[in-house]
Structure formats: structure tokens, C-alpha cells
Image 1: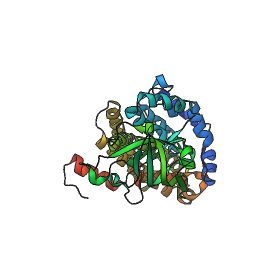
Image 2: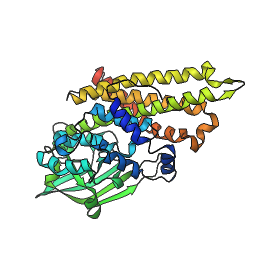
Image 3: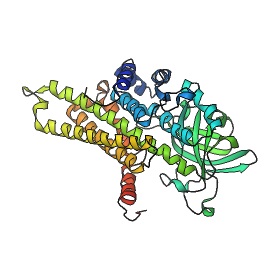
Amino acid sequence: MTHTTDNYQDIRDAVRDLCAQFPDDYHRKVDEKRGYPKEFVAALTKAGWLAALIPQEYGGSGLGLAEASVVMEEINRSGGNSGACHGQMYNMGTLLRHGSQEQKRKYLPKIASGEWRLQSMGVTEPSTGTDTTRIKTTAVKRGDRYVVNGQKVWISRIQHSDFMILLARTTPLAEVKKKSEGMSIFMVDLREAERSGMTVRPIPNMVNHETNELFFENLEIPAENLIGEEGQGFKYILDGLNAERTLIAAECIGDGYWFIDRVTRYVKDRVVFGRPIGQNQGVQFPIAEAHIEIEAANLMRWEACRLFDAHQPCGAQANMAKYLAAKASWEAANACIQFHGGFGFACEYDVERKFRETRLYQVAPISTNLILSYVAEHVLGLPRSF
């Protein structure tokens, strides 16, 4: 395994020991059945890793995003897929930073213990995509409740979560001074919602990733489930999105190291024409280039974590970390499958599974082109392109 030196070796060793109980064969069978790694996620929960960001006073570990990113990295580096559980990490930031004390006392201890799961965030809509300020899902206050109508798409882990953080427009777009105003976030009890106004339609996809389309028809949410101030939800959700992109970067880095480890080992042992194929520069150079890109992405990941944990603006760094890491893991994936030859497409080698999983992150959450647009406008000061 590629050696990593940092201040988190104890966390790495502990997560690796847990992941070793769920070898490639376990993840391969889950993928074949298009199932959910319930046993794996339960083990992570029992060990406290999914409560890493929850303060100790509420039963968590009280760690920062840096430590949480190490957990996600090591899951992917060990052959797993953090996509089954990473929502609980980045969704937590919204509740932690903007929830009331009463909400924290109500939700956090049970989430930390594993009794409740907070794995889902409802933001994306079919007609708006990443143009979040134009979402059409509305939440209208009537007495002590909000009534929600609208639609969401690509909402993950609904079937394996108890709660969802939902973004909805509470003030019409035409009535706000800034288009980023007038949206609010709510804690939604999913099981209750499914009985009273929310319809879930699963979306089959190329990756074994549980994701869904949601339809809301007069779904009533208690007013006490509003997180923070009404109308400020977009600002609040950005914290969660920065954490999300940084954690995804860490997962891609884990994937990248997994691919590099596998392909390096394979090309050392694979002998063709009387010599290891890894002796050829045409094989060495793409692997070396991918490794260099992973190491560079890793540095940006740590910078994004540092700023987030210091409660400093980190949008640029989170986006750049995600861009670099997703690109690096994809290049490593291409090298790995290419130099495995036909065996790279054989399920028993796990390369094709990890290849599919890491390809997702070129597209979501947030596509590479949107990141480039963000950097052009917000970092370089170029005119907005859309």
C-alpha cells in the first residue's frame, strides 16, 4: 500500500482494521446484488466513525473535518465505497452550525448512537440542476406547520436514512432582493413523510448507489423543524456543500491510492515477452503521473479542511480539492483498467467496480465544468458566464 505520512495514523489504522473485516468479496457481492452494505455501515456506526463530527457532549467524537476526511479516504482506499454513508458526515455540519440547541439535543445523541440516521439532503431538482436559487419546491407556512409541494431528484440514501435536510423556497423568487434569499432548510422525518405526502421513486443507475426522485404533495412539516432563520437556508446549505466537496475529494484520493496500489502490484508481477510490463516506460509514466496528481490533490484537500475547521471561507479550496481529486482518481482508474488488460473488466478483480464508482465524481456532486466556472468568476474575477 502506498505510504501516507500525516498526523492521523491512529485513525487510519483503526479504520483499516475495521475495513479489513469487509474484504473485496463482501463489497463485490453487495455490488452484484445492487444491495446496500448494511453490515459495513452498522460496523462503522458502532465504532463511532460516522459520529466523528458530533461534539462529545452529544455522544460523538468531537473531531474536525480533517479527521472525518481521513475516515472517508480510508474506506475507499480499503476497497469500499463511502457513498453508502458519507451523507451523515457532511449533512451534520448544517445541523451543527445552524441548528438550535433544542434541535441539537433532540437529534444529535440519537444520531451519534446510530438509533437515527441522517444520510440524505434534498436540494437538486429536475428543472434547475445546479441553478439552486431557482428551485421550485415551496414551503408555505400555515399556522404551526409548513406545507411543502414540489419535486427533487438524485436524492441519495432515502431508503437507508431516517431524516433528510430539505431545501425549499419559503419566499417567492420575485419577492426577494437577492435570488439567494428566501430559501429555508428543514429537518424532515422520512418515515412520517412517506405516509403523508412524499412519494419516493428509485432511479436505477450504473453505480450501485441508492438514489431517488422525490415528489411532495402537501407534505406538512412542523415549524419547529425549520433550521436557523427562515429565508437564510441557501447560506446555511453552503457550509454543508463545502464539507461535502471536501469529503468527496478525500474519497477520490482514497480511490486513487487504491488504483495505484492495485496497478503497481499487477504490473510488477505481470510478465509478457519475458519481462514485467511495469518495466516499460509506456506503463510506468501514466501510473507515475496519476500518483503525482493524487499527491497534489491531497494537499488541496488538507487546505480545505484547515479552513473549514477554522470557520473560515473555504469555497474555492473545497471546489478545487474536489476537482483535482476527482480528476486524479479518474486518471488512476484509467491506468489501472488499461494495464490490467482484459482482467480489468473481470468482476473478480474489482477494478471495474471501483472504476464505475470513481467516475461518478466527475459529474456529481457538482460537475467539473461548474467548478471551473466558480473559480473563473469567484477567484479570478472574470465575468459570470451564465
